[in-house]
Amino acid sequence: MRDVYIIFDIGKTNKKCLVFNEQYNIEYISQCQFTTINDDDGDESEDLESVVAWINQNITDLTNNENFNVQGINVSAYGATIVYLDANGPLDFPVESYTKTYPKAILEQFITAHSSNVDIQTSSPFSGMLNTGLQLYKLKYSQPSRFKKVSWVLHLAQFLSYTLTGQKVSEICNLGCHTLLWDFNKNRYHDWVTQEKFDLLMPPLMSNRETFPLAKTSNIIKVGIGIHDSSAALIPFQLIDEGPFLLISTGTWCVILNPFNYTPISRELLDMDCLQYMSYEGKPVLATKVFLGHEHQCHEKLLLTYYGLKNAEENCIFDSRIYDHIALFSGRYFNFESVDGGNISQNLEAFPNFITAYHRLIFEITSILVTRILLVKGDLEIKNLYLDGGFAKNTVFIQTLQRQIPQQRIIIPDCNVGSALGAMLLIVPNISKSDLTNALNLQTVECLYPNET
Image (tube, rainbow, N blue to C red):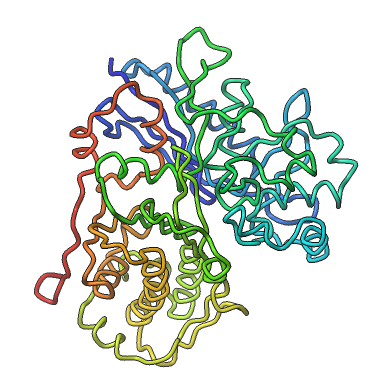
């Protein structure tokens, strides 16, 4: 029987259950996608009931596995999502998605009441539903009868941990990441939060290394309080690399994190889509985020339809000759809704086939990403650029990015589960840097050419 840790990595699209051994290697992994439900406005909402049932079933199965001696459990989850509770538990209204459109009138009311400089002081651009503080404000003023029922507010990772322990807590990574809640200069809730008395709805703030016993079981298993996924993804690299380095955490969002750039957020940086995240140590992390994983998914589907293909995998092999050809094209052939505004669109007449169009799509995606990398990099001499998440499996993306920033050393962890691994490292008693380095199995990207593809 081996000592292991169960980590639930809850993404917006994919939900994973991973079992790590004490050498940080994966012993077991399962993945699931859940059908969304509708909220009261008919918009898509996370089916939390099904997610919680899936988590509990996995815990039951894995704790009963005769090969595993479960030592701990933790949760990494996407941000910008909050759950409301009363004294008896979760309230029965659906969780609202951060992709919803925020009411313009409510935002104007907020800025009139609390100043337009709140975004600078909280290092959080006004981003509508991506600001969980604005979600709470919206509930209070658009649905006051519901708001009166709220006793507690939990971010998603802490809610999922609460379902396992019964303990309601807050943690700094979720509070400090694009919420409008946390004043980075005063290192406490912003004044507007206390003026609205929202701080009274927030459970006690606790260290990410805090654990509680798994409830309703005779087994003594410690459960972490959960962590925001992007902040969790930084942890393994912070432990093995003294830096300075950058992390590109890719998924639905591509998040570029620089834990060594301490430049205070200014209006200029906010206007360039920069913000600050918060590390598990409570230190600011200069970051930028862009919806490129979502854009890639949408455009890939459109390309498949246009060229009459069923799937992209066998048609997404990097070809340096195609890259050299499409790199000569001027202008933009794709319109990215989250970057350019307007509807998703593409101009495909110039491309003879799917693979050529796909190379150009990735070229334009990485071009956007490179501008953000340089912005977050600042004047620092960056040694390594770590690439984690979905795009780290995409050879067209990797090779294109390396060609666009040849001066940077791009390093990819073989395990490619940075958020889950970071959540695990918070609850293990001792950390071995050598074991962690071996588990990451870092691979440096080298440019491929025709005789090597």
